[in-house]
Image (cartoon, rainbow, N blue to C red; front, top):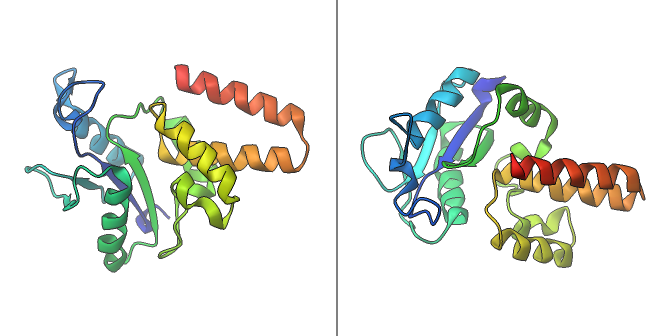
Length: 186
């Protein structure tokens, strides 16, 4: 099944957290990008694409560098769609991968991780298809005010919260918010 998935690492621009290009930030003498690529290979993926502006890797060149991760996602979609991948998973290069188990859980349980062809479900601003516009814009503003750990996890949070609210499941809503806030602080 993993052969139909294509992980894409968004790795462009300067990071306010590190003061340099996050791709070249080192942890234990390894570049962030190397750590992320190795992580996906350990999970069993045979392809990993990177969207960014640098040399030395088999990458997708993002010609709109500097306009944010959304452009990287668009250019990746337009390029990889013709490579016969049907599912795409997007991650910023500097997010924290806590454990293999958590990542597998996210892969298997969240339908937000993939989109078929050009059905875009990856950013709150574009979630008007499945969530109303006002709700999407509120979360987009919140999204701009904190550093997210994972695009897919953030979307999962929005949609699950929406489901809990619509079903009036207050206990689930509170528990999920507690878990989400704890996840951000790890």
